[in-house]
Length: 131
Image 1: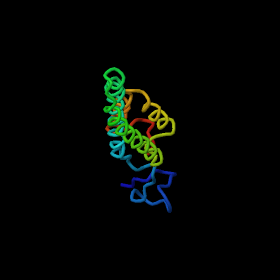
Image 2 (image 1 turned 90 degrees about the vertical axis):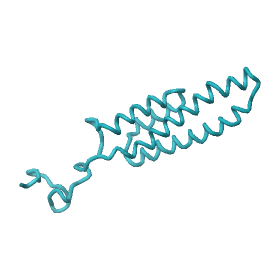
Image 3 (image 1 turned 45 degrees about the vertical axis):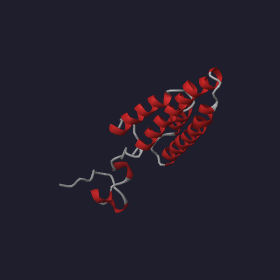
């Protein structure tokens, strides 16, 4: 049985399935998992910083928590932004989605929603997903 479509070419020379184009290849969602983990880590460190360390500094006169969690969150934030940019350059997310992911990093707790949406994308391809 011939798997080629009538009137179309699957690549140079019109070869069969072994010369599939990018459009016909399945989309591997596993590369989104590190981005998902980075979103959870960034969200967790932001909540710890804003919800615990900053109140301890101002209400408990204990700035040590901010001195510890500040750099930890800074590193988590930079790693997350790097993962968003890496996913954008790899074509795993669109420019609009990358902007949404970046803005979500500034909202405490939004990273958990981001991770959930990325987890859904990782397990089930959507109808408008790019290969």
